[in-house]
Image 1 (cartoon, rainbow, N blue to C red):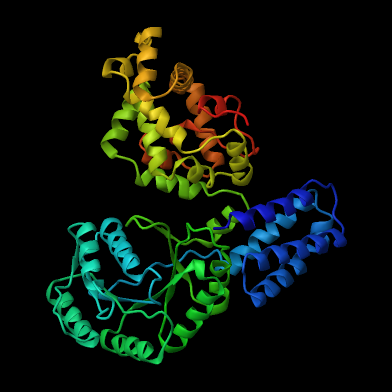
Image 2 (cartoon, rainbow, N blue to C red):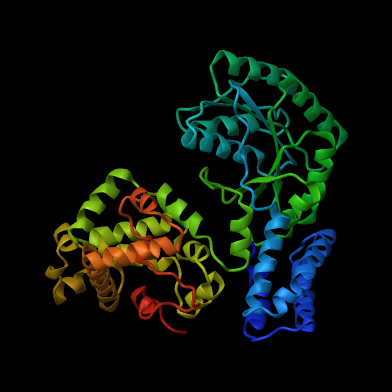
Length: 489
């Protein structure tokens, strides 16, 4: 969603950081371009005005003009301004679910993704915080809305249950029954999925206010579609006038909209953005962090989220086996296939590159090298076309076997050779890690990334997905495009 804005800002900053000195005139010209970029991204005009005024006050000061690298100083000031616009650097306290059963109420317009988001939050609470969650649909108007929530609850696992459906009940009566059932059933959290409309009307607002009075929710979250642009901001403002909203959830953040609503929401409503919805799958919900989002917009990457995703996808038993093999300096083709699968679960090459420093230039390099996520699938297909003995002992792969593997995977012998070359390089790297110097170098790199030895231990011996190094320079590492099967255009 932020790709277009990130590209515009990246071009502006390239012009600034390439200069040895900056005058006040240079800074003002750059701020004018930043203002246009934000407006084109559909950020609200008052928000843009306040942002530019705040950045200008700091960027034209003597500290910037006389600093060693004034261009980078301006980038830092813009980053700080974006973080402030998005909600500040203070970490969110999280959902208030202290006294069971804690009631959460979901509000929003029809089609904004309330029901799916309700299930996503329930799954998150059940898996990450071990909470017992009850879901109740109060949408008696939309056909099959209650059945949809019941099906989603079944998909969330054993700790998530949906309230039994009784036809003909009014929303207020369902809310009372849900609160009672949550108390009697010993549930930690009750989530109420309220009805929506295509537009805001008085009847809907009155119904939502009545439910809030009955359930006395500790959290009232507004679910807004980020693709609706400034309409989402107006919706949030009008809901907040009638309901005691405590936070926002923005859905469809994986879409190709302009992203301005996400940047404007916090500043216009004063409400914290709690979650970002990406995709329809129940695990497609990310915690919102202003500093991480700002870093990704400015192409600085988000290594913390990348490590978190890797940890979430990690199988503990498999990680222990991998750690034992790495300790011996062993790394076979089955291990390489596991790395490909993990990369795909984490969003593929594009998703991973988007979280690395220099993301914009890295994506450009990927496009120029004709790399996409199908590369990973082809590489995995090649390995799966081998016998188990061949995967564990690549030395067996003579010319005739390589032809057979190429035919079985629908690829060429050259692509099979590239996979084997990649494996050789990674296996060699693993052997180096066994040495004292190799481990010392790895720990030094981890320290520079802000990771402690304990953080490395928690990752259970897992490598960065696919063993990919950082791409801060904006170009693919030497030989990487060839290894991943890309061809220069």
